[in-house]
Amino acid sequence: MMFQRVLLMVGPILVALVIAGIILAAAGVDPLAYYSYVLQRGLFTSVGIQQTLTRMAPLLFIAAGLIIAFRAGIWNLGTDGQFLLGAVTAAASAPLLVAVMPVWLALVISFMLSALVAVIWSLLPALLRAYQGVNEIITTLMMTFLGTSLANVLVKLVFLDPATTVPQTRTLPVEDRLPRLFDTTISSGLIMGLIVVIAVHVMMTRTAFGLRLRMVGSSPRAAVHAGLPVPALTVAVFALSAGLAGLAGAVDIIGVQGNVRADWNPAYGMAVIPVVFLARMNGFAAIAFVFLFSILSIGGESAARRLGVPQDFTLVFVAITLIVLALAEYYTQHSGKLKGAVKS
Image (cartoon, rainbow, N blue to C red):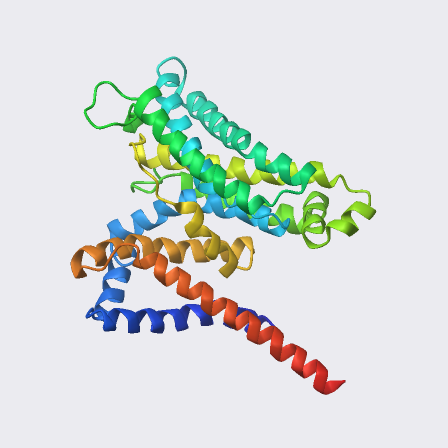
């Protein structure tokens, strides 16, 4: 059973590597050279591995939020908007707060504000889903579009740094950002992200609250008959998922970027969704797949520059992996039904 689970996780990646290699070869790019650059830059150099581990920090927060939502049967596709609004909130508040209070307190308040703004932004889809039964896929996608646009407006008009010619927020000084781990450039946000993912995994698998959320996701009618406050739990899921997305934005800004530029949108939310599904919404597996995605992301940027491959090819690879995973899942379930029919 364990071998089958591992095979279903690793197998799609191996198949996707072959398919992606065929696509690269058809485009006139040596796939072995591409993969070599990816591994060399993302894993086998000192600078590359530090960038890879730093990139993991916001992705882990987003993955934790998506695990909560998906396990509760809720499709929060608004993480990109929540992430950006959290990032802008942190970029706008942190430089002002560090000037009037201790740095640690300023950063804590910035994190709290970022999470709060993201939670508020998720309230409309949450309430519509909880009390009107409106499909959250549509509403969260709409809120992502609005959130992305609002974040750009805030950067260009409200929180614009007048001292720069490039539209961006004020820059948080390097010495006031999250501390680095040891003598490296790795942000301590990585440790925070690992703790959050593990805590979410424990909450969803070992606590009564997590059981209630999973029951709402697996069988809403049974949850109602069991006397669970389904609307309140639905809003709570949105709040937790969005709050973690907002914290992801704060970790990226306070830990690495220092400011937000106009039209900046790394689209981490949509990229992490297939990663969470590959991990089958398991927190520990999500850490491994986030690490893999970070390698592909950092290494893919270097390979793109050297070989002329679009940087979005990493997302193409992830999409291929997700399709292969879906086919493998279908085959597993279909073959299981056939075996059951034969035995009966």
